[in-house]
Amino acid sequence: MQLRQVFLVLIVLIGIMAAGLVVVTWSDDDEQTAVVPDSTTTEPSSTVTAADTSSTTTAPTTTVPGITCVVPGSDAATGAATDSSSTTTTPTTTVATGNPEGGEDTPAGDSETAQGSSSTTNSPAIPALGVNDSVTTVGFGEITFGMTLDQASTAAETPLVPCSPEGACYLVVPERGPSGVIFTVDNGTIERLDVTSTEITTRSGVGVNTTTERILELFGDKIEQVDLGDGSTELIFVPTDEIDAKFRVVFTVRDGVVESFRSGRLGVVSSVHPCSPA
Image (cartoon, rainbow, N blue to C red; front, side, top):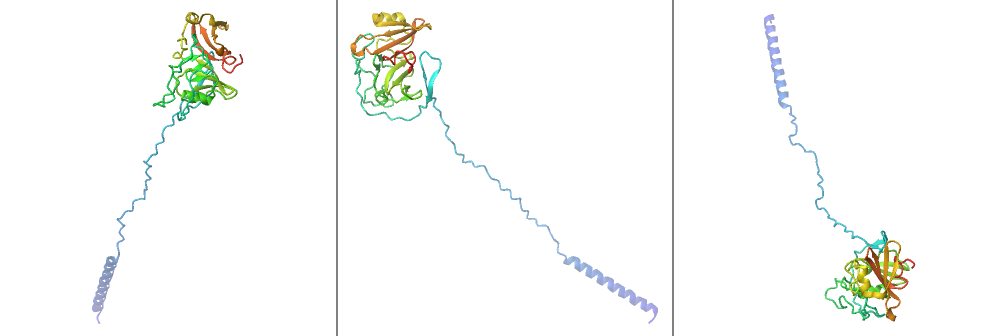
């Protein structure tokens, strides 16, 4: 074989080998698996916790102002306040009305016809005790001195609630009914009434803002005058009926007019301040 032929054979072989290499490389490229990123994107798990819209509404708490005893002649409130928000049922017990111990009218001496609603009422929300009731030597409206607290509450058709620390002597006020009245409980019974309301008077119409001249005109020699030394004077009504001898009505006068008055049993009613020694 000539050199030229050998050279041609080598060229052919090299060409065959090159062609085979190209085929193999192309085949490998086709067989590669393209890894395509997953187009399904998983959203981040954003779990939103919604605020609970089913809000529970709590009814506002209403604080009923406490009852404070303001003692006539004193600038300070006496005792602790008492919550008056309790729901009460009008008692059905019937208590005899009137003044069992007399009750001299000021100034007349006739027996009192109790005012206010009767024991049978179609409107239990309205207490028997009201501004139309009058003060006498022995009580106020349906309440007479000597009644227990339960008896007085039943007669008034409204609870009498403490407004000072309870003890041998303490103060109570009507839960419903007229304001400006304070009862004194002494040794378990109602023994005194203090009045600062301008709407409540004796049956003769004497009360806060009545003049000294008018009181002396009505009661004459039944009035005893006591100078308290502080610019005020007490005009004390002294009953002439023997049955009422242990009771008094006392008008505290300043600058010629009544600023407060009280009624009750001797001893308890004699001192200026309730529950204080005479």
